[in-house]
Length: 194
Image (cartoon, rainbow, N blue to C red; front, top):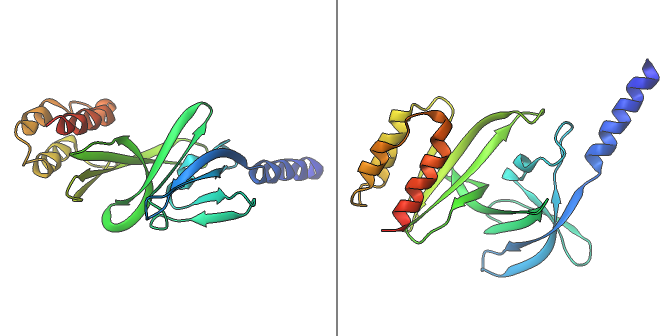
């Protein structure tokens, strides 16, 4: 029994230390694009744990040196994993000074929508957090936690009050939580058409 537990522990440690490295890039704060490799973090029960990219990313330069970069150190980074492209941006979350690496859902001239999801160690969904950014660099934040759908409508109506007709679109949305993310995307896309 003791040998079995040691084997399991060794396997878990080996799995965590075996990093997935993918080609990618980052954008400096002076808007230079640097081609690099990105280390994809892992968890015990999740092969690739993208949620761990929220606070830092490990980039590997051409000399095979690894550097940890935090939100604020760079503007953005991206990579391709399993034939899917991922882009993360250094944006505020919750407050204007609380920077995190957020995934983009909508990028546009009038506004952009970013998000991150939290998962537990077993890879189960815990919640989503959204950052809306207008062209003038004003923000509003939503969390799927205990937020009522009516509160979402009120908050977005206030945030987009300078866009004529968006309030009527917002009032047709948010009938159930299952469609929340798609409703947010639809509204952000519509604002970009105005």
